[in-house]
Figure 1: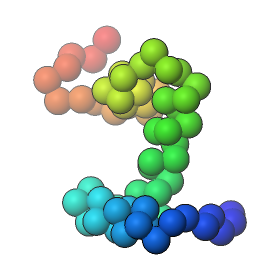
Figure 2: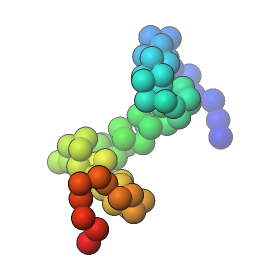
Figure 3: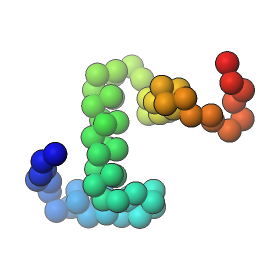
Figure 4: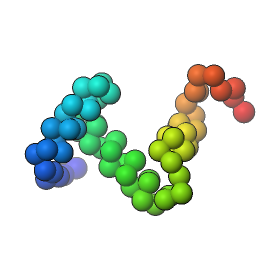
Amino acid sequence: MGIVKIDDELHAEARKASTVMCRSINAQAEFWMKVGMLAETNPTLSFNDIMRTQFETAEVMVAGKEAA
């Protein structure tokens, strides 16, 4: 674990987003970093595609979707 220096404005946005998403500021920043990394390594996938694959990998049951 380490310390990451980020711009004050980005930190403020992470703070606001973390409140909406019920995450800590660190968890929000980690989420953005993970999704950003996945988007960079999978440029043809949309955000929804990335989230769907993450839910499937974690075997999360999504409401309205039958199990395979």
